[in-house]
Length: 505
Image (cartoon, rainbow, N blue to C red; front, side, top):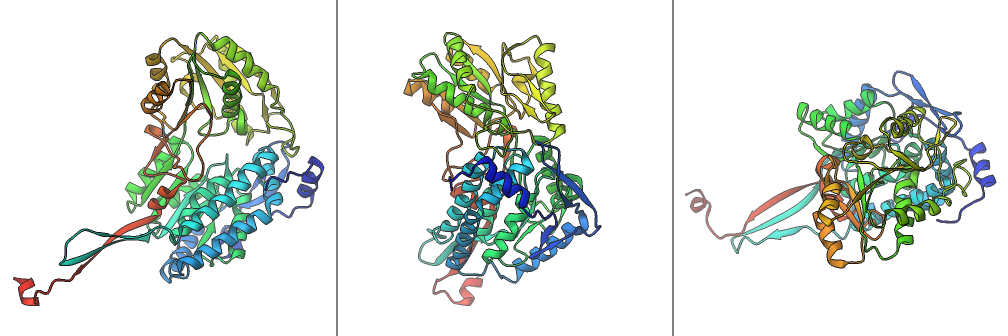
């Protein structure tokens, strides 16, 4: 999966690739019922890639009807667990077989560096599907300890029709995080990709159908949030929604559920994630490398990105010097060149948002340590800003770009207070050579994932989600992800030898 091609080879794939933009409903690529489309463009060049179906409520209604029919007739959920497992493993193999095409398509549509697309996004997409497939015949139902007069079975059943609403920053991988456990559970799924990045979701649905996932089980409905996302949230025929995106939009899905059928809602939302570096951190080169990775990987377009460096005042200057040295390795340029680590931001609108935060460096009288330049209305240099306090917008607001703010502290309690002074609680990192201090900080920081002496999100075996306004209702990844796509049912069997008359009395 890591057999990278050359820039010339990736560009050749891009030039010859056939790109479709129709929605995928009931095993068929379909235009929107209105016939309307919208363009999707390469953010690095501004060139149009395809016209994508601009679906609406009628298309959501069709997808729900077909997904419900497929669920009720049992064409997928009633298959033997070993058979569903076999099909999903075949799906993972098809993803691997088409890895170069998928990597190029993801890079073109999102601006992400193609090397990351292939070695991380596509690789982990296949791994996620395979991992959840392997769980299908390994999650046991149970019995309750009710004594000799009854048998109480506690069984899991697929929740039904699931809506998956995706972000634009990791289109392939976030789709896999959701459809992996949903399909493993036996659900029917309707995916709404972000309008900026619909192409790989459509291709993944085609590969799933080719692998043997029946028609109606995995559908992709493309379009805007108001035209497609809101109808999914309000639809009485959808039993559960899994959403990844902004906190503001996530809150709307809770309202949609309240205003419709009380569908289950799982939210993975924003973050303003700290890296806390104590003065006893043992290897400042390692710290610098990991902070740079956390802050600038995927151009900072990552809900768990390290956006706040909270560093002890005694080591700040030395650490910043080493961070600047590691930043030289992060070359910015053409996303289809595997030598580049920083690609384009996803859209012109998002570029303008990130640029507005760069402008605040001047208006809020902060210190620009490194970077700060922009190119072509699409590229933003990795940037470090020092002197950031609790009152600054760079401390509080999610930038979602390659911008790292720096704040100092002098005591452990101050560091924990700064880390927790946010409405979010998705991820954090702690750097220290003291095990007790590491455990204390990891326990006291209010975040769903806390890494020690590294940046990361764990792996497929660990749950991912947040506290406070970063999450609600469940977790992506791990065995715990299966819980949200199933319902628990109790089956009580009376085994007593009482007569019917005695039972009535």
